[in-house]
Image (spheres, rainbow, N blue to C red):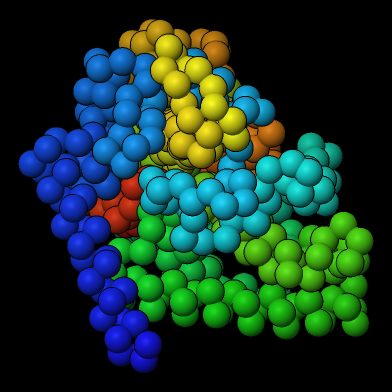
Length: 420
């Protein structure tokens, strides 16, 4: 088949899928379809509540299952009866979404998952992360210095994106990192978690993949000749032993993109929530050092950057009185689970003074619990604290624009003003 014929066939399949999703969502009112459409991107929590009224485990139109229950989600994420990867010969449906992009060990089951995770874990140990606090504080203050000079600025481009990009590129050993370029690449790759949406989207994803492939292949060659104290050097040193050559690129791309995408949206969602709830912003301003860690946890619960993940049944199991057949998916809707009234009192209220209770699922659970969560928490805590200290009069200065995505939730533009 020629390239033109392949493109036409690909386009037909994409647009047929989009038409089917629109029909299922707008006409049949299918909740998972609605989550992929404008209503779900604007406010998925209304849809989660509607789903919750129908039970803890719902069948999907594509023959899988979904849940907004914290209890069920936590069980599925922790259970060894469920995994991230299908067994040979199985082909789960598109509701997994992430199948459109190689997520390295995030998409693996043990023992491969264990092997690669063990290689990455030391870089994110508490001791290593604690050593980054002075660097993070310096970066936050430098970024806010620039923003105070102009008064009005975009919170995403001015702080939420460049902060974690600066930190993770330093950890990886990427020289001369441009935050705007990496933010754009991260947004494109993050959008692939929802599947390819159009031919233009496919081209952008291909270009982003090519750019990161060249970046890391050049960096691998450099670190083979000149090892340094960074993650890429550790991966190169483990080549052929702990990590196969074909695993190196996906692993480093995952660590890069996951290393800043979650934090970009955590900070963006947090500032948006604080400014939408003046009483909570006032509570943070009154005691930034004490309240900033609480803000981080409440934002992760109330409006998590990662809204969903899926697990595949590795064997036929019974769950909530239903038979989940081997190879079927359970889509755990983390955003809904984090507002489960069985677990949290008044779950739809944003309350930074909320007493600690059952841990939210913003960083997943079980063996795939996010290894970068200590870094994300530290970066966000410092960002919220310093913002409250240095910009107490911070306010919205324009329309918030959210990214066109379902799995990842966060603002792409958040105009704010530092002065009244």
